[in-house]
Image 1 (cartoon, helix red, strand yellow):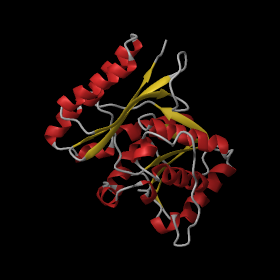
Image 2 (spheres, one colour):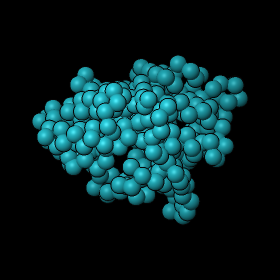
Image 3 (cartoon, one colour):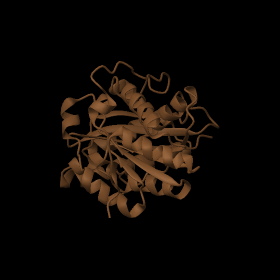
Image 4 (cartoon, rainbow, N blue to C red):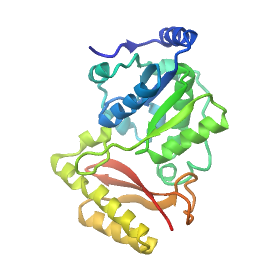
Length: 282
């Protein structure tokens, strides 16, 4: 049995009002569809801690910098509904674009600080699109908890800051990155890799894990990252847009004794891959 597809917003709001009237907690998993095991792990986490679970499916045009990338993004609504059915999802909310962004929509949400570098530097306007759609989806679904994967680490920090600064009554729940057997972080974009590219892609997490271990062992950060980038180029992965060690929360310069994160974005087969790992600095 497939998860029930819900549209329009008036129908979703009727469901939410009914659940709230019964005192039931609501969890939401925002997605752009083309679901994989990473998404399903978020749904399981929501199902384990909430009475009701909503998965949203909306390919958000405002977070794409490239019109061709937006057009090529996989859209598999009915297959996604079938995947979610056995997990007990109460609603797969699939709003139409003109319901999310009517023709006269004039409001953009912008979060400074954590969005200024890395993804923000390479994808201008991307995080404004993310912040705006997340705010809209929270207002539409009225969740008690929202579940986000740690693979999109910078996005997770943005959502945390957004919820804190706007005093949104929703708990942001981070969930571990899910990886394939060869270590590659699961992503809907991975299906666009060629068979050869998919084999080569395994070098990215391997090099990332090795660099993390070297940094934690006390090797110089700059030299370690330079060597890692060279290894990726030899493996046929590139260009590397960034490979940087940052403070895990602020994404500023890392400080000894504080959690740090090693983050990367690189191209392979015309597909942009991102990943990150936690690093313990001594």
